View 1 (tube, one colour):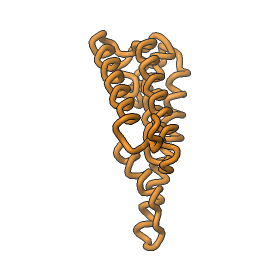
View 2: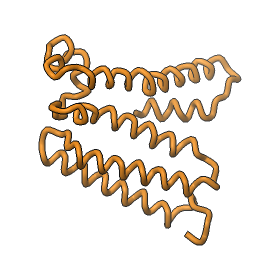
View 3: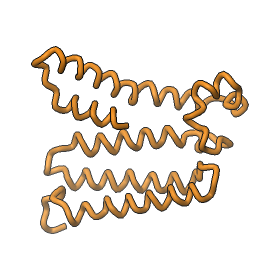
Length: 163
């Protein structure tokens, strides 16, 4: 995920003045393409596999790490990793590319909605193999939601004094 953040920052402040920066920006676009294109396609490929194929040795050796800690009895649980890759990508995109101060209220509202949808998904899917891990994940998302809600009142993201 750190490479993704660095890639987004590099793309956002692109400077093509030297050959090293051109290579860096090219690498940034490659990493962003891999995370936005290849990884979701791989996860959709995993989700569409039959359950018995997920346990076969060649398949599980190549991509088994993407679903080894989750229950794989339903497709919504298998999609756990994909959902959180998408969530992190959206979270970073909302945080880094909406820089217009007049859109701060919309940005925070979208972050709150994204967190709320994550809480609903975690509560519904309960994808972790142990109850304790599901509980920790749920409580973690509640704290993230509470911290994001504080952005409305304690930051300069919202310029309107009537809020």
